[in-house]
Image 1 (cartoon, rainbow, N blue to C red):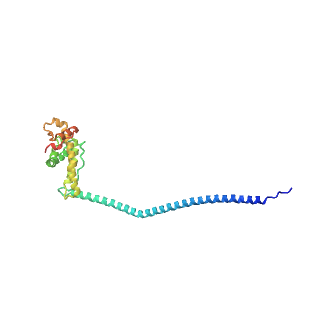
Image 2: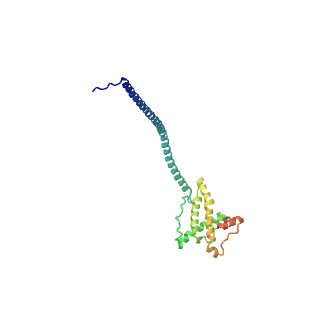
Image 3: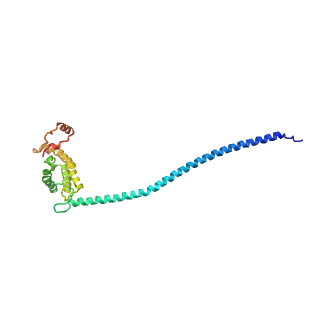
Length: 244
């Protein structure tokens, strides 16, 4: 059998059709690669921007690090200076707290009032009694007058007068005064003394000794009615009304 001959027109048409299909495929590939290239270019640009920012941060950190190190060294030096100054002030305060013999005043050991008895208790009480009679009562007016005569029978008063006397001795048996010592004296009289005087007043006016003892002082009525009513409700006496 003989093979039928192809029509030249059909052959050319088929070839052109194939060329057209290849051209379309190439165009699609070109578009796809162009999109990929654009995406890669955008990512590379973003990475370059982030790299630039990171470099700037590193440069900033490199610039700040020496200053932070210098600041830490300054703080360490400041701590040492404060410690040295505190030691110096402590030494100055100890040097200024001197008695009549020129020696630094040293507070006596804390009396154990809760267990003292007999001659030991009498000796410790006598020391307090001498300070109360010679310093406290002559010097501190109505605050001292608020102390009841039975104070030696109350542990609260013994504890309080003990530290009050010792602190007074540290602050007032001194040579020259500086600003810290002057501030401590002001705080002793304006804050610590009134607070303790009120505690001891309440302790020695509401006890069995006050009810049984004929010579116990009672606080006179306050001259300000509203203040009296307020203090009566809160059970806080007006120490200024006790009189010297």
